[in-house]
Length: 109
Image (tube, rainbow, N blue to C red; front, side):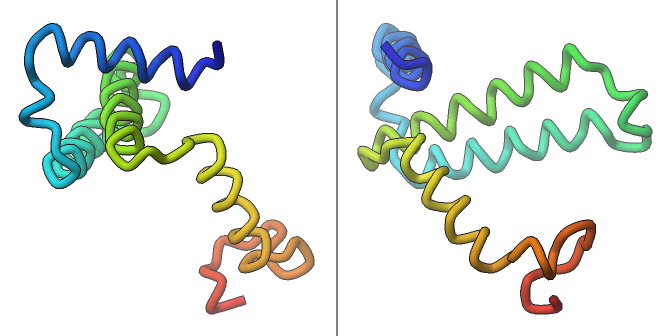
């Protein structure tokens, strides 16, 4: 079994044992994902990256992944496929010759 499928099945089992599917519509999953991303950001607030509590970073990052996987599941998206497709699109927007070592948006290259 691939890792993403295994993780998604574990998340669904956890959710279903608690009868939380009723709360996991795409809109609320997207909202939860954004809230958890904010909590991840909060771990870095007023600190350098090195000062952030790595246990908290891992915990909040896991929450971000969890809601992202659940949202992908709601739409029957193949996580591996959509990420690889996005990498291909970004490769076209950010050709190596123009973007290597440059932190500019593709519209500014």
